[in-house]
Length: 488
Image 1 (cartoon, helix red, strand yellow):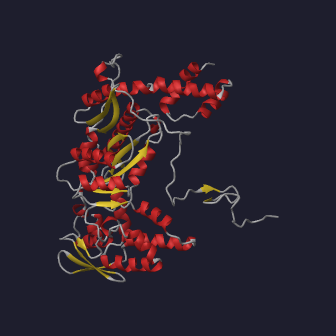
Image 2: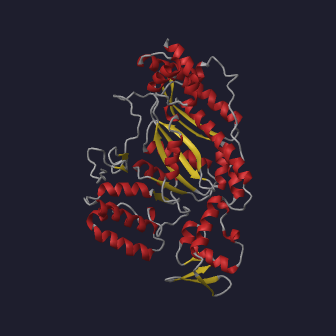
Image 3: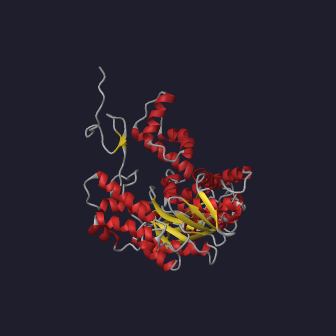
C-alpha cells in the first residue's frame, strides 16, 4: 500500500471534502480495506490526492492566468483584477479581485447594505480573503465580490474598496456594516467618503465585555443588555434616557470606551443612512463558515470552488423563487403576520385620510401619506412597524403598496435571474508561455504548526458541554458547581 495508491483511492473523497484529515484516512483504510497504514503514508497520500485533484502549488499559479481569461470568456461582464510583484526571477502573484457578472447584476435588486469582513486562508499561500457580502430579499446570504490579498492592512482594504467602487451602480447610496479594524475604517473613509458606516453591534459588545472590569456576571450581562437597548433605541429622547442610565452604572470606564466611538456609527437614533435593520455582520460571518473547507485550497482552486458554490446557490434559489405564488417574500410575510397577531387588541383612531392615532399605554401618531411614525421605526427599518401596520389595515389600503421593492418576490427573482456558467478545462494548454508564467507569491511560511481553528477574540466566550452536568456552559467537569440530584 504505497502513498500513490492511497492518493488514487481517496482522490474522490478529497474532491468532495478538501479538508479530509489524515486520521480519517487511516481509520477509513482500516474499516473498508482491513489494511493498516502509517500516519506518514496516509499524509503523503492526502498530499498526492490534493495534487491530483487541485494541482500542485506552483502549477496553481501557472493556471491562474489561464483560468481568469477563461472565466471572463465564459462569463462576459465578470470583473477580475490581478496584480504582481516583479523581481529578477519573474512575476510573482500579489493579489486578485474578482466578482461575477451574475452577482454584480443581482445586487441591484438587493438592499443597499454591504457587510465587509475577512477570513484567513489556511493553505501554503496563507494571506486573507476579503469579501463584501449582502442579503437578498429573503434574508439569504448574497456574496458580491472577493479579493485574495497577502494580509489585512490599510493598503489591502483600500485596493479592495477601490475595485468594489467600480462595480457598484453609480450614485447608489450604500450603507456599510463592519468591525473596527483601523485599516478598514481609514480606507472606507477615503474611498466612500459620503457613505454611511455602522459598526457591528456584536463586535462592540465583545469589546465592551472585555473592557469592563465588573466581576459580577449578572451585572456585566445587564450592562451589555442596556448597551444593546441604547443601540436599538429609535428616538434620541429614549437613547439619552437609556444612555444616562448606562453611564451611571459604570461611568468612567464607559466614557473611555465610547470616547472614540461616535453615536452615528452604532445607534439607530443618530444613524443617517438606510441599513434596513441590519445591526451586525452576521452575513459576513455566515460567509466565513460557508467557505470553511475551501480556505485550505490554492488560489485557482479557491476561486473555482467559490464559483461552483455560487452556481449551485443561484440555481437553487432561482427555482425556489419561481415556486412562490405571492407578492412579498416569506421573510416579509412572517414579519407582517407577527405584527397582525400582536396588534389585534390595539385601538386605532382615524384623524384624516392619512393620519391615524394608535392608542396603547401611550399614544402614537402614524402618517401613511408621508410614511412616518412617531416611533421612528418606519424611517429606520424601511418596513412597516406595528403602528404603521395598524394604520394601513384601518385605512383598508393595499399593504403591498407600502412595502419596499426589496421585499418583493419579483426583486428576489431578479437577483438570481443571471447564471454563472461553467469553465471547461478540456482544452487547457499543457505548456505555459514564458511571458504568462505566474510564480508563487513572495512569502515565508511562519514558524510552528499551522492552526486549523480560529483564534477567539478577546472577551469571546467558548461554550463546551460539561461531562458532569451535561449542559452547554463555560466550565468543565473539574470546575462544575452544578448541584446534582442523587437517586437512591
